[in-house]
Image 1 (cartoon, rainbow, N blue to C red):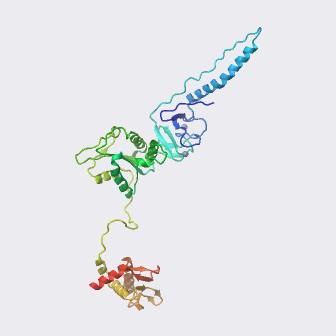
Image 2 (image 1 turned 45 degrees about the vertical axis):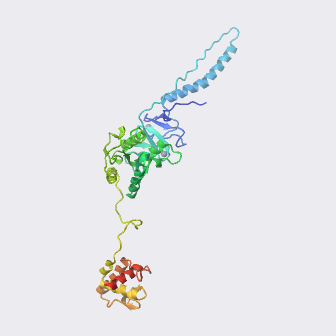
Length: 392
Ligand SMILES: [Zn+2]
Ligand SMILES: [Zn+2]
């Protein structure tokens, strides 16, 4: 026996918590295979207890219709057979009528996806919710989501890509509409997930943009995130101006939020970075620079070498290119071509000569081939620097 219940226009069915009596809607045939086990509002745990009173009444009545109806008909038949002769028994079967199934209404509910179980529900969004499958608690306000959604319409793709690349370089994690659709994901559900993983959305309104309702779903999801996350979510609308002063039309739904009219792309970028609830990566030394213009290394640096460093470099480049700096009972040595360069072992003198070696190493004129700080070899830069020394 199969009893079907109607869903709302998006395919959701109402359910109700037996404990807090609040309603939510679930999407059947998608998401988790596991049964509903928790109330998304109060975390109440239970199985097969989520149908609304109307649904239960309808299911019982329908079941009664089918089961009882058959039984009563059989009984009536038996009685008729038995009632020949003097005794007349009459029975009129009155099976209960199931009536019409409870109607689903399209109320204004928020849509929420539980990433733990890939389950999507409709509900009145509160500050915290529980996954209806595993019971995991979600704090909707203290969102950790840090992605940035860049919403655009076809024609502006090249421009939006520029922003995406620049924002990524600044340490952000931007994404575009098409990234929301890994194979098989319906666009809306992909968008919803992406929006929930984000801390802000940027709507690029270019002069060619006419408000024809394409952005409606994206804007609605963005507004929903803004209501839940508050300061942890930014809606940034940028209205670009072309050379003739033309602007695109701001969608009706976005007019309740502030929008900016940047004159240049750099100004637009500043507006985005300023409005986002997360700050870009802290300026820090990088590992290496590639593909970026660098200033040409000047030779003048070698003239700033100390007398000791110059002496070591000259001696080394004119002999076998090696420096030995062993420290033994006899004291510290800086030895080049078998010759000790440190004239005396006073701490000051030793410090000056060791400082010279360290200075050459810092400038990469010599390299530590023993990796213990006692054997060095002159580098290409070292020979170049030595050549420039002899020039002056
Ligand atoms: Zn509940
Ligand atoms: Zn879950």
